[in-house]
Length: 338
Image (cartoon, rainbow, N blue to C red):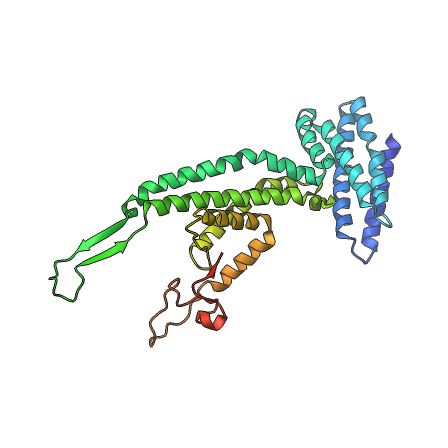
């Protein structure tokens, strides 16, 4: 087996000379795989040297048996590079070297890497989705508890109406009673329920998007990473946040969109929010379009005109993206009914 280690050293020296002699840069994927192969080769030689010093013949023979595969992997990167073959040989060598270096830690670490190497990328996405499923199921309960806790701080403003009596005589031109409407308890409860349901609809849309487009996640570049697992775990959360965002955006009347209330079908408003939140969670393109439109209509800092009073945002005077009246932009300031 000594010949294999010497041949591996000679092959590495040959590759170093070729890299120094060539004027053209290697492909990025070839460079990355070559660097990993050189790292594994160094570790193999370290294991062989340690086994010789400790006179561990069995461990030495196992380490030397890795050399032929590494030699084949180096040859696979020369000429027309076969990166898939080199990558799989290198993965096998890494698992064996890890087992020889530290058998106890390798028992757990190798199983993680075996999951990374042997599991297809779509399966990793599904695994990440199911690992985060308890968190996604608990998120609406946590959000409801947060809103319930906020209810205690909002009690002073949760009144049907507040009347301020004045002492002006009836013959005076001033009104005797001024009525100021505040946020009602029903409105707060309805907004809280719609916010939670919008988050759930957005997260559900993301889950359906993952399941219907699972074949689009097939990518050999992500076989060595945990990125597909994180995508499956966090994509529903992103959809839930988008659902909350679209609920806040439509409710704030920043967008020229309004949801008409049908007296005969009072639940239609709820279903409309659920449908929009689901579509936003399902389609990233639609969500990006809404975010871009919201960015365009946000008021910019403009030097105040002393001749005219400042316009109030959301009062209906301004409903365009550039500060012009709504009639000049072809948009009705009252919004479009859904």
